[in-house]
Length: 244
Image (cartoon, rainbow, N blue to C red; front, side, top):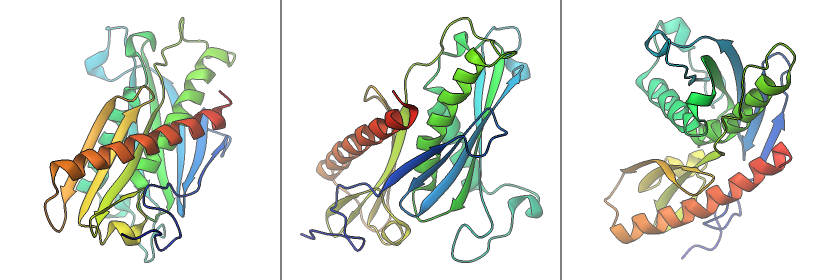
């Protein structure tokens, strides 16, 4: 059994995590989240109105967009806008982010407002979707607070927030469960798993794939146990960043 990973972490240990709020200043809320070398800028923007299919129901909406800067990785990638369409990966990730963040809010208390959460990867070293969800959750909290406090945006009668959500990646390498994969680990793992959970410990999403060989029920249970512990730690870090 391997005691330490290449970056000197133990198998169930997160990378160093930081959240810098109010960066930049123009959005209703913004957070730069760093998980190891992965850095994601999450901004939240509040707009009056909802999609056409929600109009007249008195409910709000939360949606997300995701993208990577051209040099977020070792080699330059062409902007998707220049290609004229988003990749399937991008669409899948932003749907995941949106689903995850909507679990934080009672839409019936958001009134007919839409919150857009934009997640832009500045630097990628594995776990960009999980970092986007975890950082985006803080930006969403700040955006909701802005709707309650800022003059001219007191649009909410009651607090719609249900709680935080966070996400983490895992993998199995040589039979060992590893938490919070960097790129080198993610690209060589036998199994790849992403887990999203609420602050209360409820599952929102479990995405798992046997990249090299199938995994057992026992290994799946172990991964979920490690994920739960990691997400509990991430929620505490989110709360500290928010001053809760």
